[in-house]
Length: 223
Image 1 (spheres, rainbow, N blue to C red):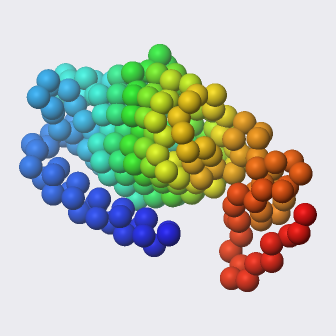
Image 2 (image 1 turned 90 degrees about the vertical axis):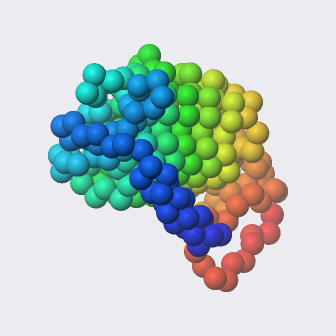
């Protein structure tokens, strides 16, 4: 399953690189960016090695409305990111594999609507991020393997959550009506019960939901 996801990520990288090459790229300060038909900017690349990054609300006189695909892909330096209120989209793979990234602050009130596929996937040190009210969609594997996040609050404004969006995050707090819970997370609103490498749907541990261990030989406990 994991190998399949990594293959999909690789194909996404090739496709998005091809698409990005068709747009004019501009540069200002520590960022490269493109412009959409409305003159709004999408950050496409971070070009500095400063550890604590504040993405500007405007760049080159244009409002920043998106953090583009692979903008910070496999960046091993950044430790914190501040995202301005103006951003509506964090595109797929934007912060994929940023192993030193610990804190993401999204300024509020935020216009953010979409957190894209694998946007923060495999950023294994990420322990603090706020998802602001108004976000509507969190796509598949958005926070895949962000195991340093012990608890993540998801606002009820979120109506669509993709498969494995919170894979192996310890706890999700969510009161909305998106289907598919717990989307790869271990606990949802304290309604799931953990015993070693096994996760159960009920406190009496009669319904086994998930095995989180790595052993090739597993004995399921009798209850």
